[in-house]
Amino acid sequence: MNRLLALVVVASLGTGCIVSDTCEVRTVRITWDSFLRADGSTTSSCAVASLGASAEAEIIDVWIDGVYDGSAYCDGRDGGRFWDVFDVGPGRHNVTVEARDVDDFITLRDEFSFDAPDACGDLQVDSQPAEGWVSVNYNFYDGAVLANPNACVTGSSLWLQITDDIAEQPAYSITSTTAGTPACTASRNLRLPLAIGDYTFDWLEERSGSTLESSACTAQRFTPGKSFSVGRAATTAMTVALDTIGPACH
Image (cartoon, rainbow, N blue to C red; front, top):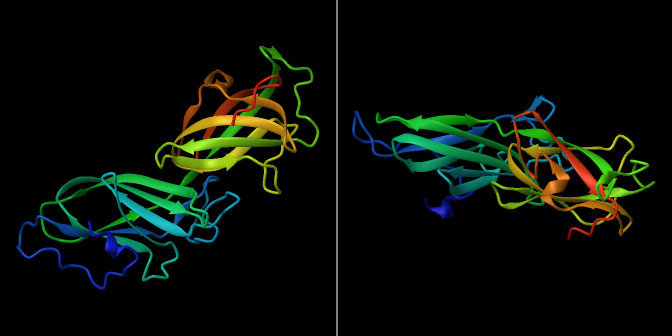
């Protein structure tokens, strides 16, 4: 694929085939007319595509058969809400469509397959990037014993890191207390929207300012484990044991 074609609008389709009955290659147009949010609602707006703190989908990246093909602005300002993949051969192909915010965090994703027939003719394939929830219930332990009280330190917040295993980059990386840092709450529940896909919950810490209060660093502190998957508008539940005498995780 010619990577210099990124962000260039294709003026026309239908030029991929000359032979009347079969073609070796064709153009496939990938579109994104709407997004599925974690609560099950749909929107066509790139500005509020996600329920995350950074709701906007700024850039759309397209991958085909595991290879990056190109990117376009979500809102179509460079010619339309689509990306054209050229020289696609017949057979089954796997597509990943990812929406990124202005800070390059992936907020929504779609993964699907399509079949390109032997017959001539360009194709259009519609995508719908989506997200779901991870719901983290956390409890406090003094080593192996449930803490008394099993409660947050007043005014504390949660630092954490979750890695997107598909993109191999952080989905969340919170290592300071700012206005957007999630609070440790009496409900002992943390609910975060994530693009559909596979993840690793690297660690979770309770902090008062920069002071460590409790931590969950190892796989043994996560149930059913550190690895989890997020489905379309679905909720994945996890339980985390925060150790009040544990070490810092990062």
